[in-house]
Length: 456
Image (cartoon, rainbow, N blue to C red; front, side):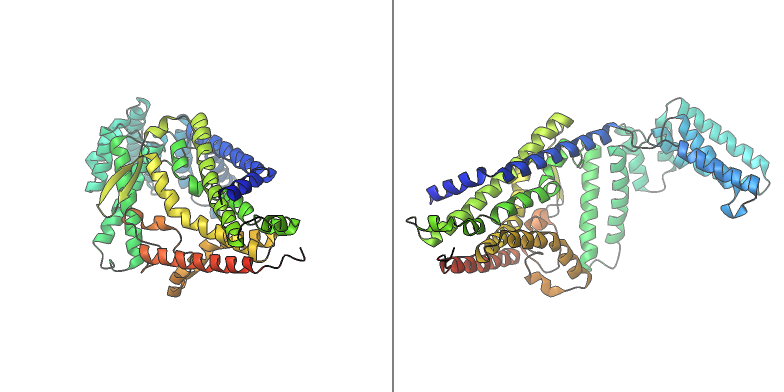
């Protein structure tokens, strides 16, 4: 058996296609890391000059051509004043822009309403307030606005946001930690709404509640510890999400190997040379199947190592110091895992997906001895799985739980999460996976043992 597996591996690694696919995967990993590092180092906003030009054109059209249908000129003037003030400080991604949009823009709109009503005194008073705020912005005192936000907080959530901003030194802006503050607030409100609702028995409402709870707790963890555990675009985040991020490349390489490993022997006529060796047909086929499993491990490891090295070189290795962070719904606590442990769990959880699709390609390759058919059917099965699950959810097709696609991703059960479909359990999913594996493998081995090779 070992000699047979060694020979199969030798044949696979002699093929140029495996190296070409690995090279294409490497290029994709390089490109996606470059894109992400540029997006992180670049601005989070855009030049407000385009807003300035737009509102100037609208005002000109209304004033010169009498196109009242375009809107109220005073409203456009308020938006123009806002855009010009933002432009003074750079782009829309600056902390100053955040203050202008949240605090000063509504005041410009108040001026517009006052002017429409002919109340020039009110407009002048509001303008004085704007000038005072601009003076604070010019001094670089973003903390003044955070303290103002704390004083004006209408509930505990707003008070918590302002407190974190001051204590954790988070200036206004559009960076990762500001997004955490936004995510925390939205998730916290959704969690509170669910906990106070009468709809807690609804399964899909409960799923959303679990998702919001996870978002809320991880955002809170990142804010309080000033880490970016939820950042999916740095080198560490891309590695942790590697099995999803690069799944298509993993599947293509795997299906190319398993979809041809038997059919190619028949098409080239080398199957006769293989079967005259002193091995049972079942042993020969088993060696090919085990070879596919070894190649699956090799492909996954290769892709993850490429992301680790490339991501580290392009984006820096610093992010790998942050552990993987998850929210455990069983313990209602944040749980820290080493990156290796987290990846190991993800590989084990997603292994049935790869194994079942690999077995499908292997079965078609053996039964029909047609590589194109084996590859095409398996790729269609892989790409069609999300659509099958979505249709089943939309039309509440409960019988779909006996199909393999809702069951093959075991990561849906990790850390106390709710599965995609109500009623599924880990043991049930494992049973479904085993049944489908047995059906495909038994059929494959039976057909191979009875194959007529005289005319090949």
